[in-house]
Length: 376
Image (cartoon, rainbow, N blue to C red; front, side, top):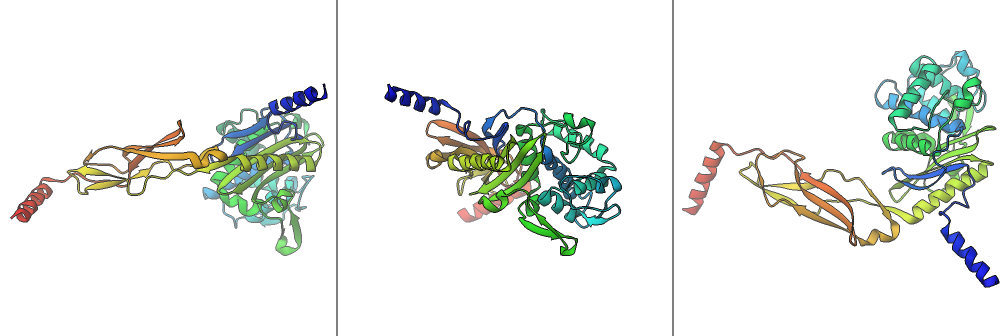
């Protein structure tokens, strides 16, 4: 009887989703940053309070403003009375105090400074309310269907705080957008300890994985009594970056363990295959100013694969027999089929690396004379 009970328990454990028993969070998700593929999840669309993980969106809007040239890293930001009055995590801004955009971003990314988040919101949009409207518009553009923001900090203050909700899935979406489109943010999200105000005020990262998890690239912690402990954690190894989100954990250790476990699972079981056009692949061009064009990949984006199958992947190029001029740069000249055994993983277009103009009558006549001369 004991043998059959043990066998039943073993089979039952194997039937459980990987990680279901070990991630102590109300909601969690593991996403590949490059492709957006969800690798593991549990209650990932449950709408919960995100606490300061909210600031991923705040930082995204700031970075978009910087990278578009609307504001600069050295611009001066003045703290209002409203910003200075923000509670929770802060750098104790005084009304009228000025800091550069870079110091503000550093304070938000490293120490989760609510006062700096509010100051930047006012600097960009005129008021926190107007900035929050931009946050919600951007969330809609990213497909964050589970999300509604009511502030830029994640604080539980104010009568509308009960409506401030998002999901682990949506946090992963905005984290991916921030990390992949604005990689400069990692200069700040990977800081363990630093200072502002000329070195007189120290900053210490609230995300302990930055120091204790190899390859960690960020991203943002959060805690309030209503939200519990939340974390969007990112890490990169071997050219693959993963995003792990845990919401509603009972302790900071449990949220850290949840994200660490997801990241470990992802790096152990998945890898990126980077497709490449075959060396020397070319197509001849008839009646053109050049005899051939090289075949290049139009989209060399990585393909997510099971790590154990990486060595089995093959690439097979199929090229057109010939092209007739004129040829446009980027014109499709063939396909690259990526396969793992009998499974086709992707079919990618191969395109011309350059434009080739059609020979004119003068060029054709000159070629004809050259051939006649060589024949004589």
